[in-house]
Image (cartoon, rainbow, N blue to C red; front, side, top):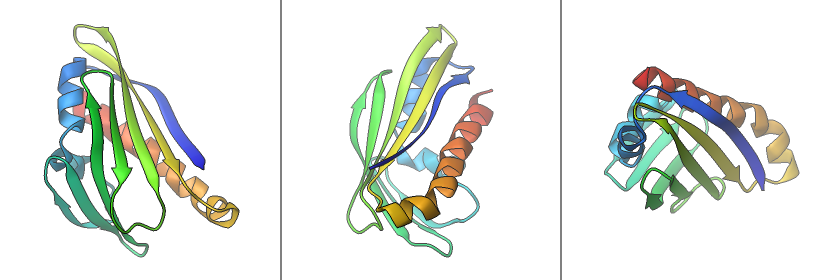
Amino acid sequence: MAKFENQNIPVNTDCKTVFDFLGDFRNFEHLMPDQVKNWQADEEHCSFTVEGMADFNMRIDGKYPCTSIRIVSDGKNPAKFTLDYYFNEKSANSCEVSIVFNVDLNPFQKAVASRPLQNFIDMLAGKLQEKFN
């Protein structure tokens, strides 16, 4: 299992607002890079294609208000994965979010995919900050 993360991302809004935003896949399209195509989502599920790579399907597996959100691979995917958001309220109008992505990769896949996957997590963090700052 390979782990990619970006911790303690400062967000200038209250925890509930960020939690509600991330707890609905219909909002995720605003966080995705340009290479994501064919985006389809309802509140609990999404599917998309990463241009030149593969199709992905995800679902929300657990939501714990202002604590965490767990997203898991669903259906056919190139690999099994989890994507977790953890929330830490700092004040009435600021919080920190940590993103942890765990993916089941063999050693070759890990060598090839590590940099793009870490860049993806870092990009999610940056776009989340842009959205609320």
